[in-house]
Amino acid sequence: MALTFELARTNREQFGIEAIHALGQQSLHGAQLWNHTVREGTRRWHRPLHLSVNEDSWVSHGNAASGAIVLGAQPMAPAEKRRLIFREERFPYPREIAYRLLHEIVHFYFAMAEDDATPAVQGLVAAVSEVRGQYGGQRGLSALGSMPFYSGHHKLIEDATELMTMFTWDPAYFSEYCQFLADPAYEGVRHSNGLATIYQPDALHEIVAATVEPALH
Ligand SMILES: [Zn+2]
Image (cartoon, helix red, strand yellow):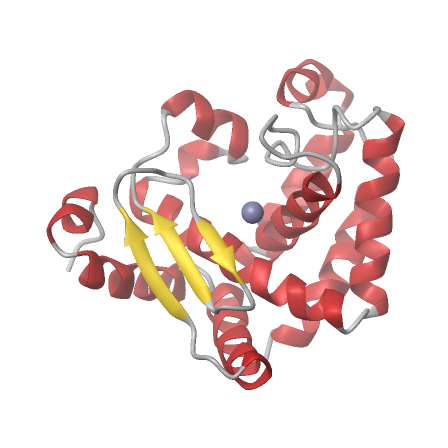
């Protein structure tokens, strides 16, 4: 069945099933991280993952301790999508939904890695924190983390989660993003989207890769 907004309005449960299916079709690493996190999270928190769908918003929520993800099914408005999704023209609605679902499961994966204080995730948090600190919190490594509804540590969590999501979606896509952050030609775009300028794109790629590699099997 096609993953459409109309489906979310008529059959939320089926929409959730189709969203997971779309993630599996669109992203090999996304499917691997999903399976890993559902399995490990269920074991750790003694609760199965519960996915529900909210057709009244595009904003999604996740709560690792309760195992609940609420996936917002509304299409993002074009201006939001342009700001928040790198190369948004490659994300027609079904891919947009699969990508946003992946972002939520990466939050769970990040929560587990933070609990475990894994050196890779600590290294990433230190990196996003250092960069945001250079801009007084206003610019960082993700446009999402620069949105005004996040503050303080939540900006860092969104930066780290979004970087891990981009890598997991497709490492080549994430490479493009790292190059974009470093390219002087895009300083104006970065500034208006709350994005930092970096000087070592390959180093960022490596830092992020190390955080998700344990889930990719
Ligand atoms: Zn998030």
